[in-house]
Length: 274
Image (cartoon, rainbow, N blue to C red; front, side, top):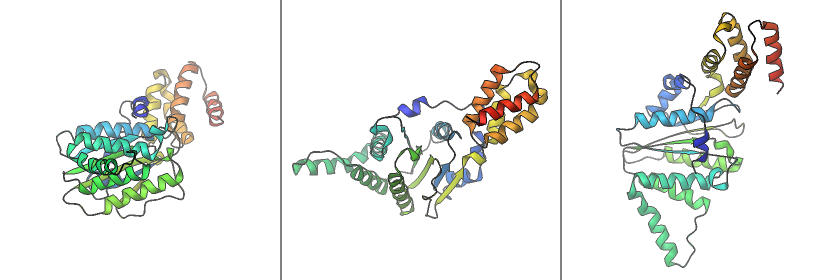
């Protein structure tokens, strides 16, 4: 179920670091707001950011009792990679693996079904109920959950998933802190309603990463005109890191020592039409 995570590229050097100083992230990591929704246009770099965030949080929480869970949706994969059932199966398994005492909640339901002669096969709604009940009963210091590409579910499934996690975050707990961060494309008709939630727009915050990548990619002997080129790439990318990456790499391949800026602008205009 981790096929999607494995194929996500690692962030370019010194990119994705801005989030750790971002006021919204700081509010989330210090429990002032415990649900962070990272939204962005296609190609903004949401999955790369979430993978980078997971790797960093593993280091941050290495000596803490807080448990770190994650799931990366894969809309091009099987149902076991792109559905709420896959999400809850993975999160439930991960929580039990990290805290075997949680197996008790699943085992009771399993034995009850077996004794009644029912086939022990969980429906998606049942898996969601089991997992959120486990969150209610959890007695450790805290749980942190990262979910990438929530938009790979249907709208109804996204709406239900959002509301379930909002309820779990708002319910009082016995000394346990629950933090959730997920990413998706924009949903005009689905937004957070709880006071614990925040929405971060990625494509308004990644311009420095785009500039840094372009500067690293373009030839050094082109650096005299880089200030103009960098501004132009940022402006036309409009937050789409993938577009800026493709343009920068293609420009490096085509660039001639005597290439003029007019030709460069024609090149960018052609890419905007793709």
